[in-house]
Image (tube, rainbow, N blue to C red):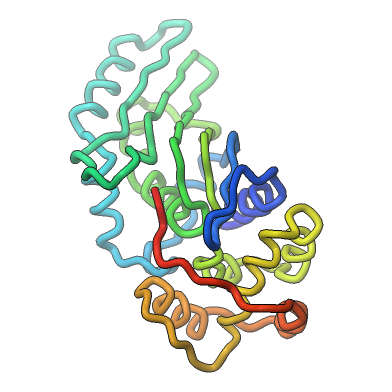
Amino acid sequence: MINHWRKLIWKAAAAPTLAISGVRKICADISFEIPWEALVESGLTYQDICYTAAKGRQLQRNYWDQAEVDAAVAKLLSRKGKDHSSVSIQMRGQVKDARSQGFCMQNTVITLTPDVCTIDIYYRSTELVQKFLADLIFFGDKFPAIFEQLGRTPTVVRFKFANVYLSAVFMPIFLRYETQPVKFFEMLAGHDPKFFRTCGLATRRFFNATHNYTYRTRVKMFEYWKEHVIPDRKLQKMLAALKGEIIEDEGEDE
């Protein structure tokens, strides 16, 4: 899972920028796919990416309607042996509050033929480093039961995002798992110099011994960095050469 997710981060970092908002780069029309085995056999946990086990319960409340899932499975079972079947599962649980721009996940489509079994998942928007990685853990936990009932094994899970964003806030998670951090920032500098500077200025602060953050997420990311990230001195030197300081924003629109 991690290697496929890392490639997605590189892809989004190199993609044309729709907008930069605070320390976030926003892109449009991004696709991603991951083999079934990589999704369900990763061994990654919510705790590995600075969540608690409660994150899975939150995702279930917000996006998993078991009645909707059961109806989709029943429909597919009723069509067993057909040349082609395709059902949609709306990814909606409890109602979003008025501050939200809507559900990030929209729907999941399962397509079956005698020889093909695929999953397509459609998103309005998501943050790719922490939130989407949590979604992958969630899907890896929830999807196997569906396909056990169907007696089928998907070959691939495909994702389509209308919008995605990369946030410098979550660079500690990415850099825990990225094996070529200097090359990543070099690539970013070549494709998107503005976000390279924004992300670089924000990231270099994690190399400091202390912080003065008040925003809870930033405090958690600073602590996560100290616990999990082995500082790359070549990256530190690269980012130290950047001029100025980043203006921190405290919110993350969804």
